[in-house]
Each structure stands twice: as C-alpha cells, then as structure tokens.
Length: 235
Image (tube, rainbow, N blue to C red; front, side, top):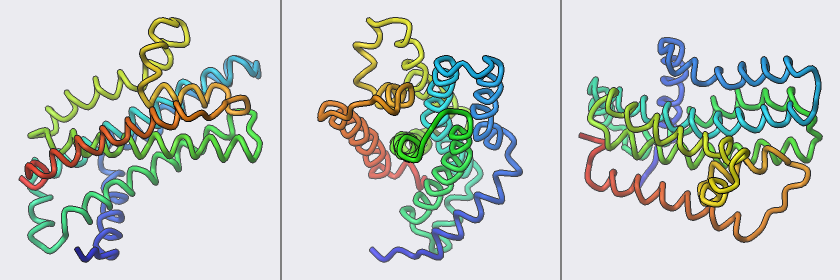
C-alpha cells in the first residue's frame, strides 16, 4: 500500500484550519491546562497540592481530550459526507486517519506542554512527563478512531466517547481517595499515566506497568481494526 505524505499533510493542515471554526474542539484542547493553572495558582506554591492538581488535569488532558476530539472529528465528517468525498478524491482511509491522529496528537501535546511551567520539573522528569502523556494520547486517539468509526453521527459519537473517556480519565482521581477502586483501576492505562504524573521523580517502571499499558493499547487497536474491517469508517 502506497502512502502519500502529501495527503496526510493536507489532512493535517485542513484540521488545523477547521479547529478555529469548531469551538467545542478548541475548548477541549485548552480547558484542562487552564483549570490546572488556576488551581495550582490558588494553592499558593504548596508543592504537594500543586503536583496533585497537575497530575489530575494532565491525565484528563491526555485521555479525555484525544478520545472525544478524535471521535467527534471522524463522526462529524462521516455525517457531512466529507470523508466519503475525500476517499473518492484519492485519499486513502489510512492517510486520512493518520492525518487526523497526527493533528490530535500535535494539539494535545502542544497544549499539554504548558503543565511543565506549572510544576517543579527538571529536564529528566519533564521529558518523562511528556513521554507518558504522549503514550496516553496515542492510546486515546486509537480508541477515539474506533468510537468515531463505529458511531453513525456526531451525537451518538459524543454519547459513547464522553462516558468511556470519563471512566478512563476520572478513575485515577477517585483511586487517589479510594484504595479499593485503585486495585481495579490499575489495569486501565489512564491509572498508570496518573500514577506517574503524581510522582514522576519516584516512579518505578515495572514489567507489570508496561504490560498493562501495552495490553490496553492492543485492545484499543483491536477495536479500531474491527470497526475498520467492517467498513464503518468509510460508510
């Protein structure tokens, strides 16, 4: 399969232009960094509370935002038949999905880098923080592609994407106060990302943690492939 980089770039540029016309998507990219900045400022430099708020909202940013944005973009273009027109114009589904995924990843990481200015990061923990956010973002984008391809329209996509992403992104916060929930939520990639973001300098990466995140990614990928093979993305 021949992949055209120019087609992927064109889709990426198209989405960058469209984001300023879509208030809902634009707000999702900036809302959690803004709220985190307000909360960290309000606690007056108390590092423990600052790190807590950064970890909570950074996890939401890395999980909730990519799922909902990706599902919304895919389903909206399916609903408006834009995707069908692009495919008929010679753009392959893989090129289109890569362009969309690249756009969501770029915007999420760009706005997510603002968290580095809020916390006490050094070069090592800052790089690890962004890497962890990037891994969570990739998992969430693949999940969002599956949801967007499965949904028939924008409303049904949001109805499915919002609760799913809320469960994955809010469980780390709930597990912080409830250890019983934490024993269950540790098997979700959102919890592992949240654990690192709470304590980046003292986080020990184990085989179990790597396996949990890898299995989560594979499950998202299988869901996406299942949807794609049943032609739900193109139809």
